[in-house]
Image (tube, rainbow, N blue to C red):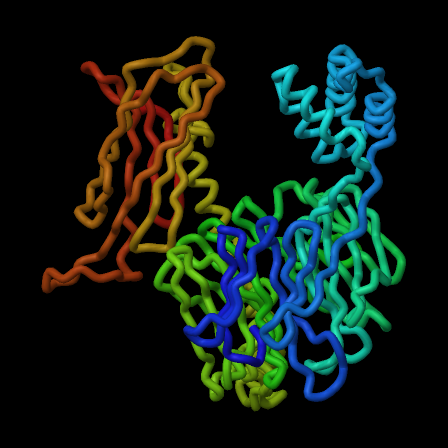
Length: 559
């Protein structure tokens, strides 16, 4: 978005149309499909009017004052030496009296070029690729006869474009253009003549490029390649940060980190040492990402547009806000629109344009303030160091130390006696703590989860024998009406030796008052529940476990 209120459209019919409001004033045909459009300031003179840079094929079209101003074409890339030798042999091949080239030479050259393409020794020119796509021998001969005397060059192609400030951070200061190409080269162009001032060679064609800083000072350029490599370009140095596992969808560069959106519905944040800071999983597929910067409020974040019509605003890994659009958003931009300083422009897949304005009184919350503790935590509580209760307790412990020690020993002895009584009860009923039985080689564990009145009962059964067991069932018995299980019984499957089977159900308990109402009552003893394992035919229980809502005990089969 620029400072002027104008509309611009990129048509799939390879035409560039520009206009102010609803009135078009320029319509230019393009040789190939456009791949990028950006506004920038080509000079530092005031008043400085922004220009448009349109990338299409190997050329960069510059528009100023609503008219075509300049055309820059990427330099030719030398062809593959092996490919050059094949075409040189075609030029030197003998010809007939009619001037037609020998068909055998054409067929041999076609086979050699196909071997070069399959061996992946280098990129091939468009001429060679078109020649290899021909299956008819007559068409090959006619094509070779037509192009053999032309110089063999590889036509470059622009894949992405970005801008970086040259020597000042002012909004209207001069910009330098950053161009990524299909030939794995990143160019930095300096206006007004758009000369190449810097060039970086990478390992794969460039997909996304983003920059931050000043070109004549400290700057950082982050590039994502088609093979998933993330590079950092800085002052004649090229550093590979990380290898992405998923193909990228977008790239943003901030002061200390880079944000990458990928096709697996995730947002990744990497610092400039290659370490991942965080990752965010989105609820839907990501359509695009864009920076969200408000200079007057000193707020920096980023926007994420999803396929479910949601546009999310993040500050780091903190979700600040979420906007529901009228349709699926394919492009989003935040900045100055007409006279409004803070506008969010969203382009829909249906062709609609949605503009939302941010109120000037809106308070933006940063991610740091969300992660900080509340302000009330820093307010001290006025508690005196020594209170009257503390002094009374100190005097009581000093004066009645013998009585307090005897009371402690009495409680400890009573606890030991209760534990021994419980153990003797288990021994008298021929039960071990594990809940296993000699007649039925099944181990039963019952665990009660919860604080009441809602509980969850988890049962774990394990066949500790050598033969599989079948025709078994589990039943829950309770003597109190206050226990309400959601499921009173289970039909057990075939119990295979060595495997553990886990069952669970929910319980509800309540004590009743004299009026018939139901309410939790801590004074009433907790009811008990008995878990019984029995066969499906006639007969008594084979294994029991008694569960107390507060303690659990397992018993052997009744004798």
